[in-house]
Length: 344
Ligand SMILES: C[S@@+](CC[C@H](N)C(=O)[O-])C[C@H]1O[C@@H](n2cnc3c(N)ncnc32)[C@H](O)[C@@H]1O
Image 1 (cartoon, rainbow, N blue to C red):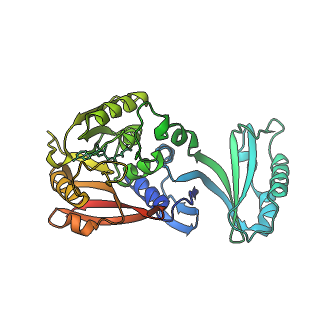
Image 2: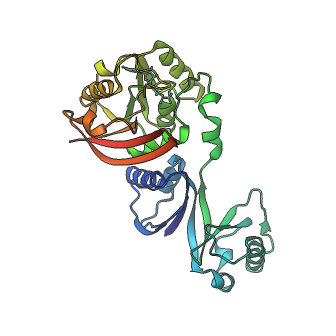
Image 3: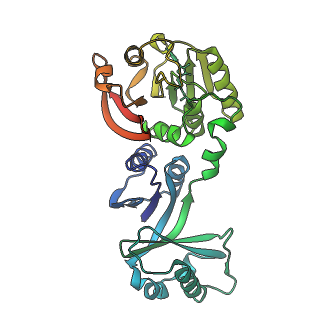
């Protein structure tokens, strides 16, 4: 089957990288059919609805996913819709929503929704109703590049989750906390699987650990500051995450009884989060030296750093190498660099 993913336009590379990573770790094989700004079309040869459900549940930079039913020139959409066996996919209620993804389309979206809705009505049984609030089948049409792509929605990423878990809404808040969306994406980039162990050695308020816990990882967090350790525990409990170990430790001296499957971390930049007087470069370098012994050989580490730190220099003399990088412009004087590292 072919699926379309409507990606967030917040960032140019992270949404696609996140999809690749989550498909990979959930074992869903696919071929890329089309990639355009905000839209990804994938062909999935062996569909397993449960695997796909797990993929959709994990994503943060995707808005919705639908199974493609029609992909035609936008001017032919209504003619093709007349021929489509809608009764095979709609059993009780439906809604049609059209979204223009660029300025090329001359079609009026409300009129198209009305016309398509009418065609579908004439092709399904009398019991089937239009239900705009909570339809059993939600039909999405996107207009892009003169094409109309129509399909039934198989998943929608909950905005509520990322909104309700914003750092200032948790019981323990401290400036410099990472947004839940970015934290989830960084967790996903490491391809961590349910039941595996993930470490954040600079855990702060626990934002990364919360997202890792939500995808089913066993989470381990450490911070040099006892206040943060207590705060992280409170935040994890608040989010219903009980499979955790959080304790006070200096990331440069950390030791663990077992190696972890992944590390995701956002060390202090020396601006809002204190580096305790240590030069950022030295702190990062020493931490990376200690972390290289704590991760499994095939494990991945996802790290956020400010643009003004030279990661090549930080990693020199460690066993880590950079395999992927994404740049997020925060404001005029700060760009965050998200790097995915593996052991050499
Ligand atoms: C940028 S904050 C982490 C923010 C976190 N991602 C969140 O969402 O809340 C960095 C944290 O590193 C901690 N820290 C500073 N030096 C440390 C060290 N040597 N070892 C461990 N933690 C340290 C600080 O106490 C701070 O909580």
